[in-house]
View 1: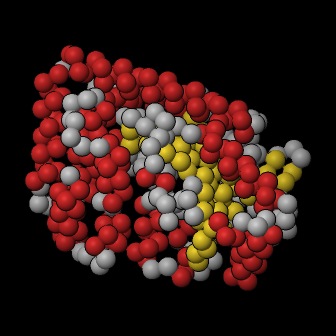
View 2: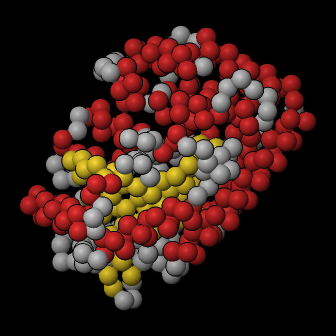
View 3: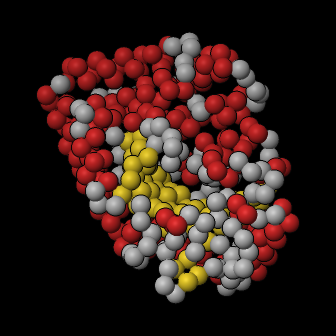
Length: 338
């Protein structure tokens, strides 16, 4: 299967990926939190029939969460193909994954359906176009819970309306390094957007990577939500690039020393935690984008940021490991790739 992160992306020096996700529920069936196991199977079967009727079945692989090993479940999360919430109740949940890796239809997460599209770089419009296309295709067969006044009905009131969450995963090492990032995040929160960590709500921002997304889904059209987020992300891209240019002049040797030291540790280190590796890889990616480090490909660094995560690392070496062995093998993997 193609990996979404194997491609190059527009504005990829700052924006790692774009994601659009819409929440939908089926009419006259309880929300997942209140469903019986039989009702969850009913939802699963309805979605399977809808995909078959849309003649899309050949374009997707189907996975039941309970049919996956615990390791494989977490690999899908680390690759951002499914949400951490989907694997919490593995007896009810499943997902369809498009063979090109750009779309996932999650079943029985917080809502009956979570349709997600994911692409490299700043491609919010393209993500929304594909997500809307999948939504329209499923709606030809499925009756979604909808209210004329409130829009699409969801288990969490904050998703009611369009049910849409759009986000951009962005790498902001220069803004973090200079302390300017907090000003950006405060300004963003005042216009109805929110900043989250690497895997969304409740997670930390490893490697200077953040997710910026909309907070409100009611009272705005899908296109308005997408455009608002896109405008803000473009401003952040400009500010990150401006700060890089300033650092290259005002703190040239200090920055170069920091970036080359990080590259040296990655090339020769023997024990490495995932947090340390993420921060070092962030420095190297920053050095590549600033034109300081020239013998490493930025795309390889992005791939490594996923490969070094605990489950993906164990999958790569095809065995389960304890913490110490993971730290040793992580350093080995990074040395091998660099």
